[in-house]
Length: 425
Image (tube, rainbow, N blue to C red; front, side, top):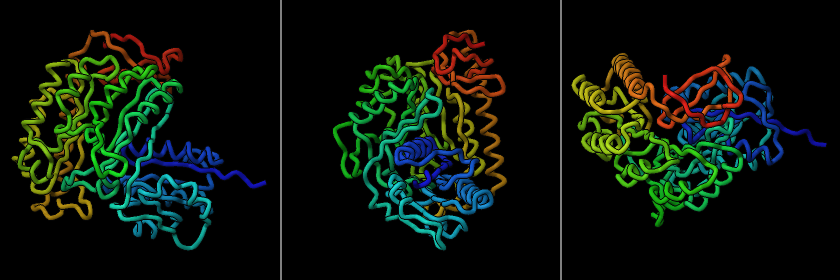
């Protein structure tokens, strides 16, 4: 009788990657593989990579070296965005056996049937223009919260970004299929679904990415609101120019969509936004924040911002700082600009020194901390609903209020994966 092969997965990068890894893992278990933890010895290791930062590339190499030391006879497969962008570079990393591009990621099982430990790595990739089709994915961790992929790819051409080159054209699932997935997740006891995609607000382009269907993101959230058994939805991230007043108004009136938006800004300077090829100016961003806060004063708003973009002067950075300081936002995700091959930003000068980029990052992270402290303080003494997660860490458990304030309390088993009324202390 043939020995059951074991497989272990590791994910770098975004929530979308986590949802895809989770789906691949379930797929391979159905095909007869035994799932193992990445720290254990397995027959096959799969690393799902990211391309947003330099660090993800370095981390991938370090992980392969670790596997080589721990399990030199095992097969190593690299997939994800870095694999699509630089397949040859990855294939030359000692220990890598297979590199799968965007079109082949979900054919992993078929590739593993053909793969043996050989001398040179096999590359299975194609031009990103040829990538089409949509693969539904979701991550299931401890049943509390699931990341459900509803859209993939991007048609925008931001000058700093490699994602369109790594994931292809914007394309979406159908509303009917997303609803079916949500209903299935409800039967598994999932309480909260986070809708994820590369450019969520662009939902509605068919699986081939070629044409807009009659469906859009506003239609999707209205249908999901009707699904029984799911108690909470969050919108992971949505571009300000695609966050319409209709969407904001609907969330304000919904019992299931949480008062929480994550809206990328990237820069508070219109000059820099232009060089970044963003599709809005800071005035539009401020207007969206104002609409959200007028309808939901208690709403959490998260912001993505990039520091150290080429030609960002002290004056530009001060504009960003002052703009963010003035906005009623709750927290920031701060990214230090890093050069990516084949992006237009490489042609922009002057380059901001690395030490200046790091200083600016630190300044905005301090601002983020103050923003979150202030937001939490505004809700002190208020009763809000908290969904507690199931895992125990040093005798404590964590959960989030509807408006994304993190609550930590001593672990109580009966609260795991339950929504509890909580007065913010």
